[in-house]
Amino acid sequence: MAQERLCMRKIKEVLKLRYEMRMSQRLIAIACDIGKTTVQEYIRRAKAAGLGWPLPEGLAEDELEKKLFPGETVKKESRPPMQLQYLYEEKKLPNVTMSLLWEEYKQSNPAGYQRSWFCEQYRRYVKTLDCVMHQEYKAGDKGFVDFGDGTDIIDPETGEIIPTEIFVHVLGASKKIYAEAVHSENMESWIRCNVNALGYFGCCPKAIVPDNLKAAVTKANKYEPVINGTTLEFAEHYHTTILPARAREPRDKPLAENGVGIGKRFILARLRHRIFHSLAELNIAIRPIVDDLNSRVMRKYGKSRNELFETLDKPHCLPLPEKPYEYAEFAKARVNIDSHIAYKKHFYSVPHEHLHNLMDIRATAQIIEVYLKGERICSHKRGYKIGGYTTVYSHLPLAHQKYAEWTPERMLSWVETVGPDARKFAEMLFQIRKHPEQAYKSCMGVISLKKHFPVDRINSACRRAVEYKIFSSSGVKDILSNGLDKKQEELHSSRAPKNHANIRGPEYFNGLLFEQNKPMEETK
Image 1 (cartoon, rainbow, N blue to C red):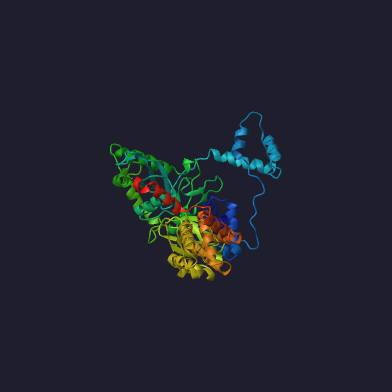
Image 2 (cartoon, rainbow, N blue to C red):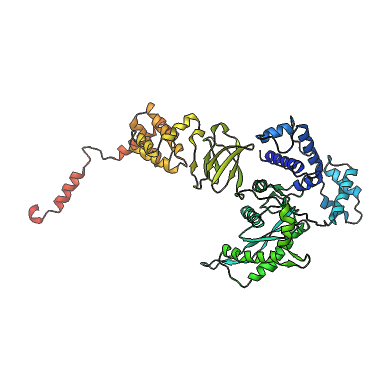
């Protein structure tokens, strides 16, 4: 399941930070945004299981979970959390005491904390309200990223004014800046901008601190923000760590906030009299201004950002991987009865033994990869046709693989042996079915009716099915079973002219018309 896999990723991150990065348990707790006791518990379980870092090659996530939690199930916290901000506001009111607040808390939550723990948690919370962190940045340790309002661009064809955002990445120790304009703060822009920033720096800080925006964080939570799969994979690719800043806490990322301010004052202000017609044109203008900013001497330090970068951040940052990260999106889909999963309305085959399993999908611009519990099951070239199918026929059950040699025209020719109306019925099937194999099955169902019904009746039933828009072999069978095809034939025959002594046919009326049109002489 999604949450179980995320938990395994977080445990892996704890082990990596502990054994590879040599971080303390307190720093690990801050980095992963979990409690220190939770970090201790993960490390204790890993030691008990004989695990360190790196993990044994080929160790699947479900196997790791079994080693760390043998015979256990995850239990939810039974005690309800304290609403500390509410308590803080209530405590400001006259005559409101902690005893009163605790009594009200216990009345609403009988299974809640006892008074001593309740008061202790409140005191800790109050102490943090006025705590201002003094930021001292270690060389190569952190990079801070944020978005701010950019300059507008004008569509040259329509004249539409299109707003932009400015992305800023600032390295902590040297204050070196990278800036880029984007259309929006979506996940793809966030990833692409960070990839470009790291390429600009030529190295990667040990941690990247974004704000709590949806691009990097799936669920912004005060206690445990959930980082999305794409951001986690991006971090793994560069061997860095993502440390989301607290929501509405600019003190957690002052360099990013200041970087946005510098971006507006130093970069955008210099472009205020220029008109841009595309994002690419705007970014071409931004780059030399950023280069100039990094080369200028800062009065406070007596050195430029580039000089500080060469002596501080660059020697201690992480080297870049051989290839930049390729943007990927993650999703989940269940394997359908036809051994396919759907991603953005295109269908991809999965080995049939995984029928009904919930699979993890990793999608890039070129490739679709399908995973189960961290193990890659299959991959496909990405298809963009809505309703289209990408199928490896060996993924299908043996009974279905025979369809691989069929073509729509071959099937239509086979159905036509029943009759022309049957072919018309089959042609309609190929038009409305999303995948040819679905139409093959329906056509085979119609052909199999020859075992039980005459061919002319099947053809007639297909004609009735088309008239009433019944496009399934079971519908044709119902028409035959209920004799509705015969009623249709009776209806057609009832409309035909009948021979009878009292019925005057077309010859009579043609003769009468001839007599009426004769010249007078001939009539006489």
